[in-house]
Length: 400
Ligand SMILES: C[S@@+](CC[C@H](N)C(=O)[O-])C[C@H]1O[C@@H](n2cnc3c(N)ncnc32)[C@H](O)[C@@H]1O
Image (tube, rainbow, N blue to C red; front, side, top):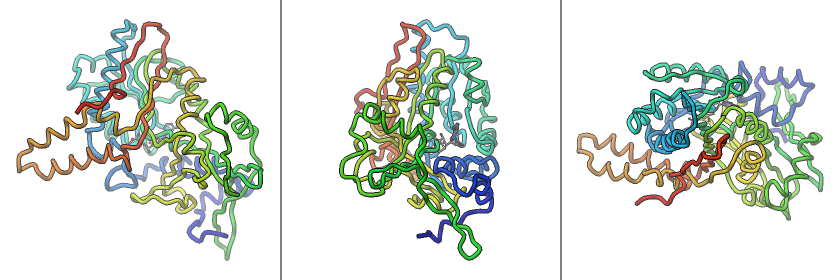
């Protein structure tokens, strides 16, 4: 049955038409987010933040960056202590959104470890031109620090030492959707349906690719569970982040020595690939509203799919990285001292009460177990030296 809200915009009719009338879901997600002229991110029309389409941790307040800076400074000092010979340390952000995280991070590092700032350069790796335009407005106002935009392929040609941050970006990588039906597996696709001179989008079943078949064959060792799960219903649907192996492989060539922090929506394979989760994890966001109808308002919404923790770690391990550990964001930020920020608000004078209440609310949202606090922090290291030992304060027991 056709969903009457899934009207297809003309540009997407053209793209699907060019492809013979149907495309894979993977291609659909890539187009609606990253099509150079019409994608949600590439046009740069979206807004991240309380008054925008969705909130990310750095968009709530600079407290996220101030806490993260404590860990980033530790990692950079660990690189120095290990005697790694590098004139510059790079802080690379993949998918920097509005650019606020890097701006606030550098301000916080200047407070915690001013001597380090002369040694730091910021590198923004942003796929979409529209987002790069937005980032320029923010980052061009950061004084006294070297910064540049680059891409992973160029960075591979002149690798760097430092820290890579990927905050809420891997969930926006296009995913394959797999449909299990009568003991067969299909690749989910999207096609056009014309009704009364109007085009609508509808989901279809396509033949699985050889990569999908390989993923299913390897799934047992990759996911550490029996897959597909027992007792799934007919037309059970799930997702596969098929671009992660090559992303980890390429990124490992960008860093000579350093750490990588991935922060994202993620869950264990037994929760992810569970018979009860019959529609996968894919969600669309627009104007702060989550919607499971991801064919609605194509190109005007964010689409996001959770990461599977075991497969993400496995893909990193088999592509040049060592795993340092993972925890929930709430736990990580408390370990980095979030409760001290909360206590300090008790000393607020009555004149600043409204600002203090707003800050308190943002801090609580960052650790809310039903919201951002449930995000996962996964840390990896890349080394070309036996001496390199990173401390991970974010994994320690929270201080009270
Ligand atoms: C949800 S936003 C996250 C923004 C930011 N990290 C934050 O926390 O506020 C995703 C960002 O990643 C960018 N992006 C998506 N895919 C990317 C890729 N493959 N490489 C680099 N950037 C990408 C998008 O254009 C957007 O700027």
